Image (tube, rainbow, N blue to C red):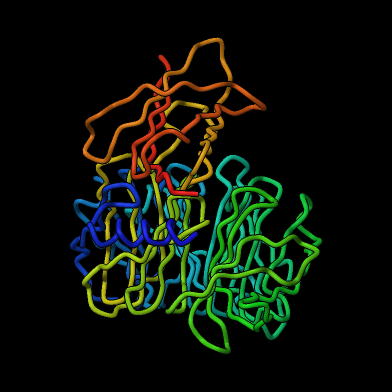
Length: 413
């Protein structure tokens, strides 16, 4: 363990990248209004919404952001695509806006008896199921791509800040005071919600907390981020089981407001321009220095081989990557690579076709490429790395259909 820690700090002092080589570039948004949420339907087409009815859209991958004139001045809190063309924005005092041309023009729609602040919206694009969350424990759902909306639960004291559609059968909302009702899952019929008490735990102690956002990859795997009431600071809690109200959390120096994952690459952000990244599915995190002052970062969207972060004062950051953050470069592959860091073996999950794979390791300079033997076992490619010098490598697994590329760290036992 001591050798592993020393090697970790040696790598940091040498300035060597523990994660893929990329950086976050400040983009010109054309506004100084706070931007609260961002959504993309493709790497080219996206929308950001913010205070005082601010909506800006891009059709060229964030190179240019164009303002949209609206007849509303409410602060807008959430945005989500329901289809390639249809997109919704929600905000203060029950504001719901719809665009049928991927954000270039909008009209307001009204949901009966909804006059409270709406804070987030999420869709499952395949099924057309969506959910809006907000104040007074608001849960407003649709099953037809937003043609009609139904209030299934409101009138409580709590507030739900974040929503995440998992798939056609399940979604999660998170919110104020995690002791009471921060997490819910819905049934296929939409009418029965499973309330869960949730305590982020740190150092073996359960704390009350404000859950701001969540990201789930399926019904049993995901993360919740937010801030502790006491002792302060932020938390990231991996899924601890629906029947378990104590989730073993990781403590962060700033309150966290948002999270997104693309396969094993994850990003979290929050107050005072705090940003951290994970390349191993959330097992470890590296703080990223942005040098943009102390603005709050409000939302993250990873899409394709890039990503966008929006925040206070009109901030937009775009992920510029020299290596792919998308681990599924071969169509249809569901790929995972673990453990990372590794000592003796690395396992890569790929669909087993009749084709042979090639597996190689290269040092961080890109030279010294070495073909590595592997074996197929228990649904995994098992790659033996015990005899390689310790350090940072690029692992490439591929066949005639494409390839998977990932930075891996080999540590001492």
